[in-house]
Image 1 (cartoon, helix red, strand yellow):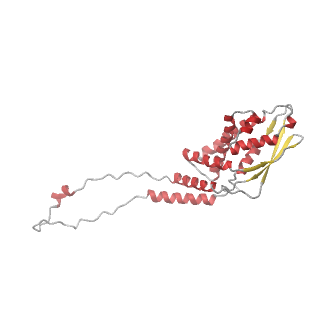
Image 2 (cartoon, helix red, strand yellow):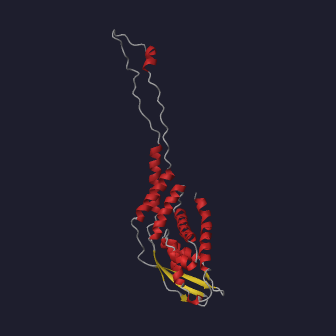
Length: 263
């Protein structure tokens, strides 16, 4: 599963590049010098994180479906990064649950887009971010949950043994004091054999991921932010035709800063 995650990163980032790239190229040339670049970046980030798309749709002239896909790509990338960071291999159902958690976390992100400054090559602006730190550096917690899951699974899957009473010496006698013939009464005393139902084995990895999901939900209910704001600089180039060219790696830095997984 992890191998598939790593392969999917490139595909998802490519989708994000196409969406944001086409949006940036939709700016008309006339009056471009007065274009609200910071407003566009604010709309792009609000679409990516807060799942609000009206401003981006208006500025970029894209459909609601395309705008929502922008948020979906951001969430999916975050899930991939989270799973790769902590070496997690969730099932499809668990993956969907983790996406719900990350989508809710993104809604809680805090950032401020500063006003752009015109440069010789285009525009320069900064984004100040109060990073969510609940999911950062949690290796010890993840390892603890993994060990607990393995121990619980081992206990649940251990063979169940029952002690049968020893009746070999419990001889029975009739009313005259004579011992019963065991062979004669064997068939009469023998109880029908009952099949023991097969118990489904507990999958340690599934149990581990469920514990991680519960852990993430608890963290989501008690969101904490880094008190020290982090600044990400964006260098936006302007072509001779008046189009915006934004390095998507810079947006990826913002993605990894609004919700941090590594310190």
